[in-house]
Image (cartoon, rainbow, N blue to C red; front, top):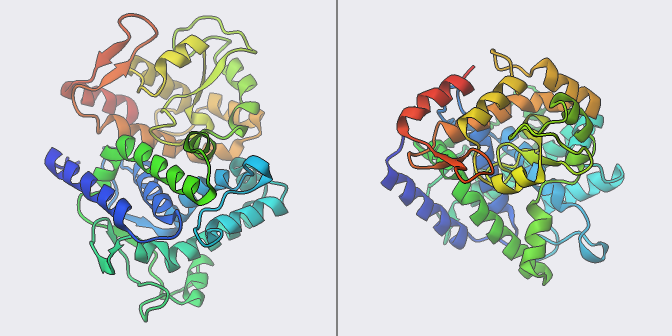
Length: 381
């Protein structure tokens, strides 16, 4: 794994912020694409923590669908918020239509109970990404700044635009002239992984600000609505997690009250939006409140790893029990991405970062360079 120089990472971050501020768009697609790229790079890191240099339009479409799925819920006065200055963003419109036709299921439920219909929805999202946001994201003043990636096609109004028939053939698994690869420029994947904890809150805030302006809404309420964890996360998993943890707080080991204990995202949701069962633990309100968005210390990581994955990186029987009892067996497919996320975060930490130990005076331990190998032993299969 080659670490980019600190100056290179800072320079890249500055250029990304410039791109966000200057890229011409009437919709929120640029934010969804950038966060989607970050999430795919994190979830596709190799076992040594190396970020990918190639991702696919399908991988990106799945993450963009996830990002917009929550936004398809109705906000104040029963309306779905507009994310296009000229009406509604087409991708969000497709997701709204899908959810309303099926009784507004959440993302997990839709993926679990309607796999064929959900796959068709992702097909449509992928097609819209191919047509418009992907070939336009890096255009500033009509010229490409070639910051993030290279693709083999151009905007829909040009001769380099892909044909829908070719994309449909590729989506059916047939021979096709369409190349779905998104080729990241050298060092981009590593930079996106390392900057994820900084870029995400900035992008989310700008996204919420744009939607607030379009819909004339207060920004704080809107940001919470758009980006907080989905409500469906807690309902079914509390009981199985209680059984798994034998009624004890994951962090301090103390007895929990079943009705008042809290569900915590082990990898903080603010760092990576993962509400799959592999990333959920039960904790005291005091422990959960003290941990906040800090990364957990190594002793917590070790127990989380042993509880959730076997030596080969496969979900444990204990996690399979939680999935089965919660009716979320399909979440087991997401568990490898959660482990990859942990590798992406912990194996890229710079020295000096404080990791949360527990709700006491000596609440943190400092990550040092020689700790990296110890974390690698824990997180690499």
